[in-house]
Amino acid sequence: MAEKQKTPSNPYMAGRLEWNERYGSLIVREKRWRMMAFCCVLVALVAVVGVVYIGSQSKFIPYVVEVDKFGRTQAVGTADQVQPSSARIKKAEMQDFIADTRSVYVDAAAMRSNIEDAYALVQSGGQAYTFLNDFFRERDPFNTARTRTISVDVQSALPLSQNTWQVEWTETTRARKGGEVVGTPTNWRAVITIEDIAPSNEAGVIRNPASINITSLNWTEID
Image 1 (cartoon, one colour):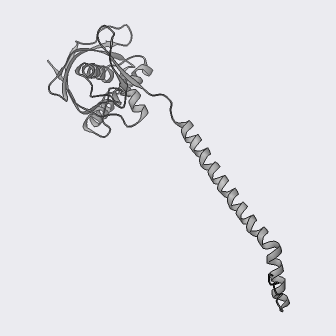
Image 2 (cartoon, rainbow, N blue to C red):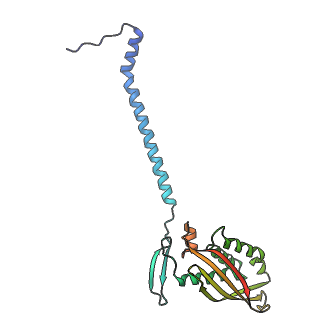
Image 3 (cartoon, rainbow, N blue to C red):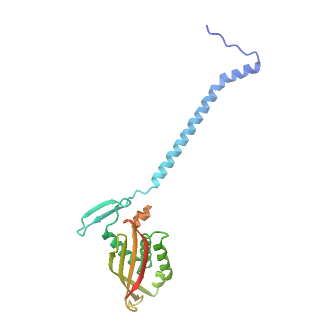
């Protein structure tokens, strides 16, 4: 037969024992429910942050598609995983780069877009970047367009080595009003050094899908 629990002779100890027996278990359960509620709120918060982060990511994946002269697909791949550009792509990029940087249009918006495309190919902080900044500082194309325009006709773009290209072109200056030729056409030559470096962000991928990075640039007028 179980021995009956003895009541403490001290009335204060007896009162404490009575309190523990009646309300102690309720207090313990309340603490556990509070802890459970806190954990649920924490899990919900992490889930909401994750959903917001995933939703903020771009769902567009740019692809580079190479085609031959008949329009048939030769290679397809995401822009950040493409192999080093072929000589044909590099040649086209060198020609476009010269046209974008040296041409002066009446349409300021079109000219600004071309300049941004050109800078997308240039290594930030490198020699080519500094050279291009100095050129636009000395010959602001937007100020030039107030009185005259300059058209560029690329004659050739030839590789001097695996990473160095020589581009030659002719520039014709015309008055903004009337379109008459001002002076005689001038001939120019540029030496451009490039590297195959994939852009580090999505905006760079869209602007420079061929992953061509111009590290060195110099051009001079020739006879």
